[in-house]
Amino acid sequence: MTNNDIQKVAAAAWRIRRYALRMGEVQGQGYIGQALGYADVLGTAFAHIMNLRPHESEWEERDRFLLSHGHYAIACYAAFIEAGIIPEEELETYGSDDSRLPMSGMATYTPGMEMSGGSLGQGLSIAVGMALGLRQKKNPALVINSMSDGELDEGSTWEAAMSAAHYGLTNLINVVDVNKQQADGDSRKILGFEPLHEKWASFGWYVQRVDGNDLPAVIRAFENAKSYPENQPRVILCDTLMGKGVPFLETRDKNHFIRVDADEWQKAIAVLDANKPEGVL
Image (cartoon, rainbow, N blue to C red; front, side, top):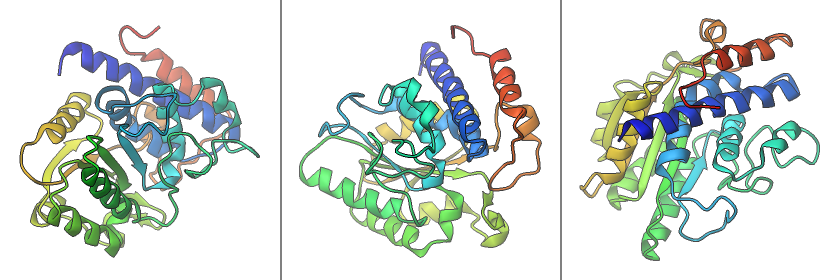
């Protein structure tokens, strides 16, 4: 990791936050708290780690990014725009009839979307199957599954975790957004999941836990996961802050769907613009 890498990813994460806010303004709603909090992770994955051909979404050797938590679609679309998979002007269609950008991620609509995120807890199982298939075909592609801490409630998540370790899926990275929120409230109170590091390690995974908004730490964790030499799947636990980058949203009462008033979208964009990373035009 070089200073140039950090600057490049910081610029990507800043643009992802801004694209997400612009899409949220189109509909007046969206899971913007998650998008802002997760932008550093997405910027790292799409601007630094993944091997993609933006205009060839079916390229056989592409790295696969699975959005298990489909309600994070607004964040994923912003990352797709940053990566050049979707044109920027298309963000104006977000959530509209006949748009390729529905409010929940759907593979049948959106280039680059590898799975439809419906019931939570399905992504890791699909990722295990993909990683197995790619290995059998001797395809060097990487599978990154992105999920939320609420999905830790689901038994299928842990069945998939056992399978991945059993098969020694070195081509699988699972990323968990630990923002401590789900639809019913604080995810730690709905069903306690700590100690997460020890749990994943006991299932046979190489585990890293980082501040998901500490960009150098996130970049380092992805690089470590990609280069780790042992015969294990890899998981990165990212503690994130919903609303990150917009202080008046960071401090808002946390819930699964942060309320943003009509006059606040442009205020939020103005806050981002005032804190533009060095080198961003």
